[in-house]
Amino acid sequence: MAKDDEQLLKAWMNTTLGIPWEEKGEAPDWGVLFDRREHYRIGSVPNGGYVLTAGVDVQNDRLEIEIVAWGQNKESWSVDYRIIYGSPSESKTWVALSHLLHEEFEGEDGTHRKINMMAIDAGFSTQEVYAWVRAQSIHNVMAIKGVDNSLVPLNAPTKVDVNFHGRKLKHGIRLWKIGVSMIKSEIYNLLKARKDDGLIINGSIGHPWCHFPEYNTEYFKQLTAEQLVTKIVKGYPKRIWQKTRDRNEALDCRVYARAAAIALGIDRWSESKWEQLAGKNPRKMQIEVPGKDNQEEIASQVTIKRQSTNRTKIIRSGWM
Image (cartoon, rainbow, N blue to C red; front, side, top):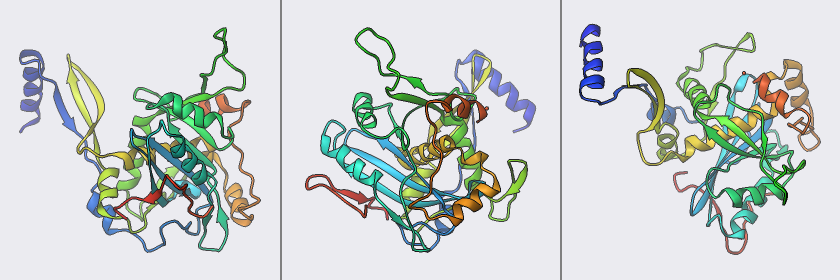
């Protein structure tokens, strides 16, 4: 179809038929990602991954979690993907998540690392999520909510806990709103990059390769289960993310894990900072996390061995 004919068709569908015109953006090819899997052990931290974050997606009968290791220039390794079966209304579900939060992951170099920041979506079972986050340290857990129209990937947090008089509690729960559209676009760009591509990061050329262990096909299908669509609605273009299949939890978990990495500030760390992290014992390594005094600044600058309870089982997904 010629470009002029396409524009006429758009106008006719929009004004005469009242049907929005859609232009579909390409999602990464899940088969290409599957074929480039690497042979490191699931649950281990490969060399180069110095910071661990986790993204938690809350469903009505389970929690799904991806643990991601981050290195310099946004290089990442999927360490593990877990499913905790159980309703968010049951305490055993949250006990199991607490065990995971404190689990240690062995590195290829023999060191052990814990999750530095876990981001959990509070858009579903909100009060149950808040109750669990409230019981954790603010230094390694953050409640998040996705927004589509955000101009930054991570916004300044807002206080959501109030007292009897309706006043916000000084040390109450903070909710971080994340720009899911921006983060998804970034993730897809990285997934579609070739290993020898050089991308400009912090003013220099980096190679932010995404590494994956030998997961089954379902993980990669979920990771690429959405596409960015342009709809012409009442004469104006509108960009939205549209699911291409029913299951997209793996993509959501990766978005949340990336938001946790942004909150830690890894995008702004200098080369000397990474060298310092590489040379330290991970058990004693201190990573600055967003506290009360610098949360707004962070947002503005952005523009256990496997355990289970007797009743709740933490497992890897069946597609691994």
